[in-house]
Length: 176
Image (cartoon, rainbow, N blue to C red; front, side):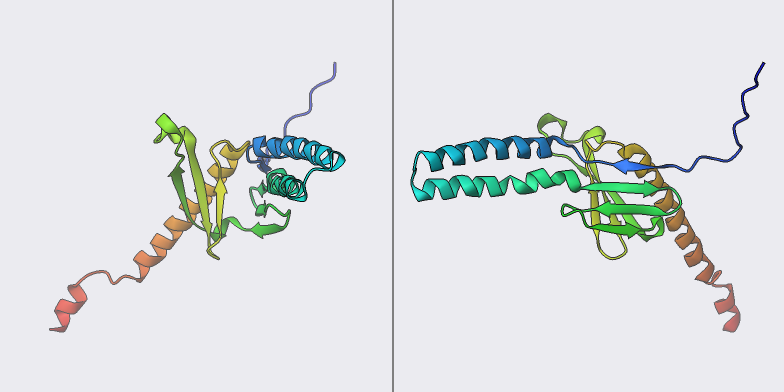
């Protein structure tokens, strides 16, 4: 009888990717296809130049929607996280660079003050702000790591400040 190998005592490092909602990207692709068909029909029908330019401009306006597919956050528990922007450019951040985390209310009709519909904004040392939407995929573990790192840094800074404060007025009273 074969025995199962024992699991290692090492804790598994958490890593993953946070994706924003993919609906805008899908809407962009559908609109681009529809406007392209309309543009081809306008050209074949010899429509006015302004009509073709307007439809062409609508095609160009769908490009940023299609590019929302590029936005993502790759995170690693020990190394930090990498933020990929709309153009696909990436920037690496360490967990220690987080200066503030706040929740913002999503304004969606009757659910104005729901915690489930709250976006989270992460502010970094270089005044950069990263928004994690309430409908992002795989955001729970990333936000847990970010909050944990932020609280550790805040507590460490508070301890450093309390060490530099003089103990009390006893020293000043003895000088008089």
